Image (cartoon, rainbow, N blue to C red; front, side, top):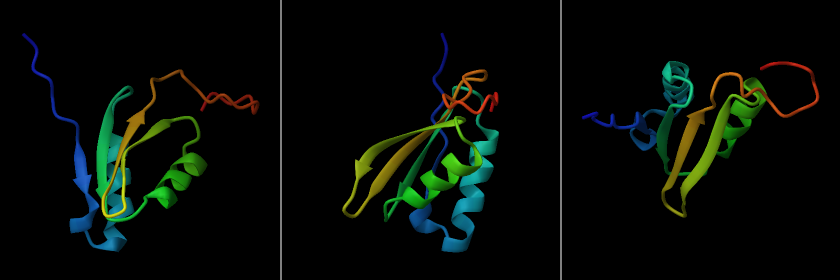
Amino acid sequence: MTETQPKPSIDVRTVPPRERHPRIFGMLGALPAGGSMLITSDHDPRPLHYQLETNFPGEFGWDYLEKGPEVWRVEIARLEEGAGCECCCGSDH
């Protein structure tokens, strides 16, 4: 019988603002392909989404689980290796 491991999660409402993105990126870096993590925030984390799309195109999926107005919850998944991006740049990122 296999036990399901809980997804890593961070509630950034309890983290000083300047430490939020570094902690999140540290957690994302530790995710295996196909793994995901949960983020809880007091605001729409759209800037983080843009940062992921810009710096790691095609590597992460983004799914809003709750959209405010007081609490936002997002699941970020590391896409399977080899999925690559769907752009026409010719890269295998």
